[in-house]
Image (cartoon, rainbow, N blue to C red):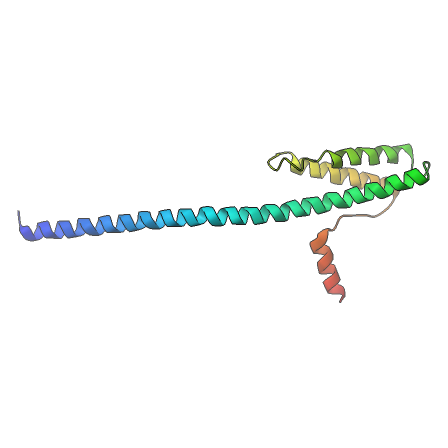
Length: 144
């Protein structure tokens, strides 16, 4: 065997091994960084989404409190149908699984709450809707 070709093979093999080890090291570093940044981003997204859900549920809870206060002052202010729908809305809002972040029914529950809220508003013949903090802020900025 020619000693020059053996040296060339050794050189190429070392280059390939060096390339593979650098690739593997880069992959491991990137994976570790991705875990850290993924957790941070996930926490930020979760905090934002949780705040928005809480804000919306707070809006509905506030409306329920106002309507219940009206009923305490004047029990005949609303029809029995409206009172029943308000009670159902309260049950839905009170039953929201705040402490179960991985509950798969959260979207369906929110849709049921929104639907029941629209039913109450339609029965009361009022136009109320939750607009959210961000859309309210953008409307205020346009007015200025």
